[in-house]
Length: 237
Ligand SMILES: [Zn+2]
Image 1: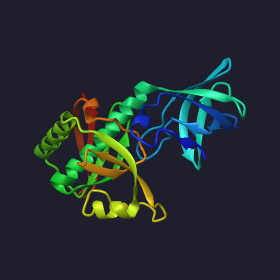
Image 2: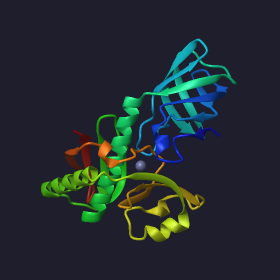
Image 3: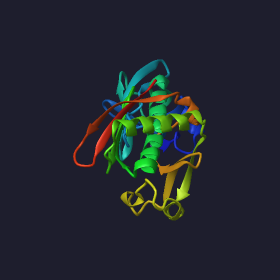
């Protein structure tokens, strides 16, 4: 198993460079013993970047989690046992962290104000979308959501990441936006993203340490996606 070194706490989300050893190499990819590259999943895109070793370098074009964490490379492939240095494309990753943390705030605000649950989300590098259900949001509602999220952002809320027992969360998150029944029963410990107690949600993605890093957000569009289901698009300004 590859150790995911961005997982344990919020500070580990800021690892930009790391050393690791190649476990297996394929025609266009490697598996490492540890990695700071985020593999695509949960609505957050894969990181990109590069691997350096000895005299060589190769671009990391995509990272996927298919049982193993596969780093797809464009360039030479390091052999098994070689020590590499990984470099994350930080500009891209940091945008994902900001947009992803903002998504937690949108999800919490829409649940608080309109009882709408988040039923889908996708982050892109310069904008994101979130789907809510059941909702019927007017233009005024959209303005209210945007204002509320921005006031939370300006409130400089601390973001923490920790492991919590499922049973504890089930008590704590009663009647909350998070539907824990969707997470397989076999998972007893969950990685929690806690935005200053305002929003607590299990998530495997990467996030910023304080909401003030996000700046401001703007909702750019809303779409109806069927009965009682709406999608909003937002970006940072
Ligand atoms: Zn998250």
